[in-house]
View 1 (cartoon, rainbow, N blue to C red):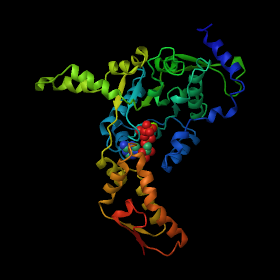
View 2 (cartoon, rainbow, N blue to C red):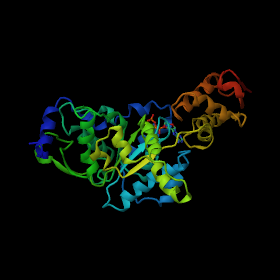
View 3 (spheres, rainbow, N blue to C red):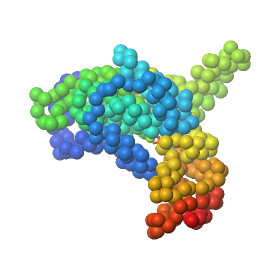
Length: 384
Ligand SMILES: Nc1ncnc2c1ncn2[C@@H]1O[C@H](COP(=O)(O)OP(=O)(O)OP(=O)(O)O)[C@@H](O)[C@H]1O
Ligand SMILES: [Mg+2]
């Protein structure tokens, strides 16, 4: 029976017997993230998940905000919106919170959530929507997410039920074709966690023991969808041209709200209405400008440039460079449309020869001077 959830889970266990080895528990879909070139993440991740987490109370909202802004640059309003939605979920348990974050590659969607979850000491899991297909295992995918979360919560079901489920690349699942089994139907199966329902979860210790099936309540899980939604802007533009608003100051506010993405834009984009209807916060990330990228290099705790600088300092080497270097790196990195992602490859390029020289003769140098041209030619430096 389709609505007999206990039986469905049992079926799921049966059908997936072969495909469900123990390591499913550690399958965290992090393949994309580990390629970042930003070592910080791995460390954060290990630290976050290896410790047993206890609910130790959460910091004041503005403290958390200030903390996140040490990492995330150029998204102040967005960070505040996300934090507020998360705090609302934590403090007002009766309100289910589902957040959609829209933004192009490398604008800080994933990183913002990671930093928040890390500071709040909350279990979280980042799932890649691309891996979720129908494949005849109806409902199984949602269960996988819960397993991952449970694992990150050290099997503490109470803790996991308060955790964050991040579903990345959700836009890839949007399809105008109702029969599309890997698209729309997957979105609809996600309604289970979006709505807040009791799922029957079979025990990880013994998935075949029906007596061990647990109730898992998704009511307090904070669900955050991420996606780039290429083309969505066009839909908004069309809408704004159709309803020209705001000739007077009195209309200003209305206009601002209209300028945000509306649920109707998402429906027009192809998202099922019942899915969109359950999203309560839509956040649109800023596109990062050259100045933002330069500021990331200069100030962010994620700055790969600062990491190189710190490593060289440990070896007794001071780095000397023009204040314009950050802008030059930013400009070079802006050429590709991958936001802050490209910064690490540009900076890695800059330090390639330098690292080789230093490691060839570790105690020889005290000063490393970078020429502005090093951005294009990584032989333009002096070691002394
Ligand atoms: N606003 C930002 N401030 C500081 N660093 C940033 C920002 N955005 C991105 N970064 C850097 O770029 C890396 C990649 O960012 P992130 O993973 O958040 O991208 P994303 O928006 O999720 O993009 P994608 O759609 O490609 O997954 C981060 O680990 C971080 O080092
Ligand atoms: Mg991402």
